[in-house]
Amino acid sequence: MYEPIHVPVMLREVLEAFGLRPGMAVVDGTLGLAGHSLEMAKQISPCGTLVGIDWDTEMLEVAGKRLEQVQGVELRLFHSDYRRVFECLRDASLRGADAILLDLGLNNAQIDDATRGISFKQSGPLDMRMDRSKGQSSSSFLNSAGLSEIERVLREYGDERWARRIAEVIIDRRPLETTEDLVDCVLAAVPPAKRDKRIHPATRTFQAVRIHVNQELEGLQDAIEGAALCLNPGGRMAVLSYHSGEDRAVKRAFRALSDTKDFILLNKKPSVPGEQEQRDNPKSRSAKLRLIERKQS
Ligand SMILES: C[S@@+](CC[C@H](N)C(=O)[O-])C[C@H]1O[C@@H](n2cnc3c(N)ncnc32)[C@H](O)[C@@H]1O
Image 1 (cartoon, rainbow, N blue to C red):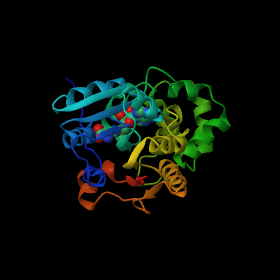
Image 2: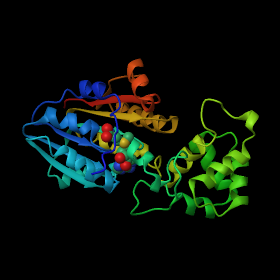
Image 3: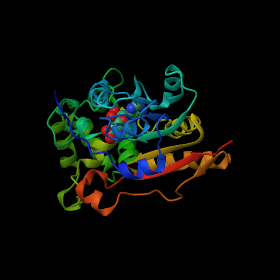
Image 4: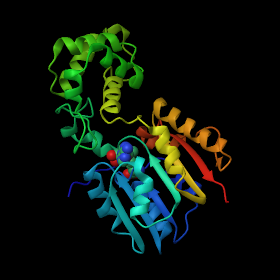
């Protein structure tokens, strides 16, 4: 079996924040390869329930196999969206959760899978969808959207200062079919002397288009608030975000929840990975962890 590797980010901090005990009910709304869930499942065994949600069936399959090694935990896995935590809990016959984790974005297995066309480092078709059962592929978006729409996406989701120029080249060179086609557009648009030396010139464009086709920021704030309302009294929620758009939504959601006085912010400023973790797992570098607790009634 294909064994993708994904090192769970800020695992120690998440586990410490949750303080899990046997018998608890936990929701992992972004199950991925079950890196966090595997450890959470061990801590709630025996008699605990783990509700795992992912909108990518391939992740669910790998995660399900990994989680089989933990005894004494009821596993309820859902091919769904974390915007539907309430429905998943109901379908698992649970009234609420003692801990909810959202580890936003995508994992290495998805990035490294060339057939998804998510990474500019991999040669493949321009698709970028995490849930390939629905939605619009990135080639379909780039080959049909207008100039101002492409420019907006690049600027809003990628903070790309060359958004207009890149959008113009994309329109000029359509149809785009492969990751190389998109990389070539960016390289043709951004003058070599003006490139940011720290990152590949196509990084922001790929991030922006991926966020757009997966609608990663649409309703994120509402989704986080909705999920937090599924916590049992005393229950905690942890959200890991990886770029400013995500963190902004988490911050706003947590602020709105704490304004109701039913929730307490556990860290006013987000926690970030320690130096050692950032060295060992470079993909953790942009991570921000925010924590909230539902007050005991
Ligand atoms: C960063 S990975 C999670 C990694 C996981 N914590 C681990 O350690 O293996 C994010 C996962 O969330 C999934 N995902 C992203 N947005 C989602 C959404 N709206 N609903 C459900 N799953 C989502 C992705 O498919 C991906 O598998």
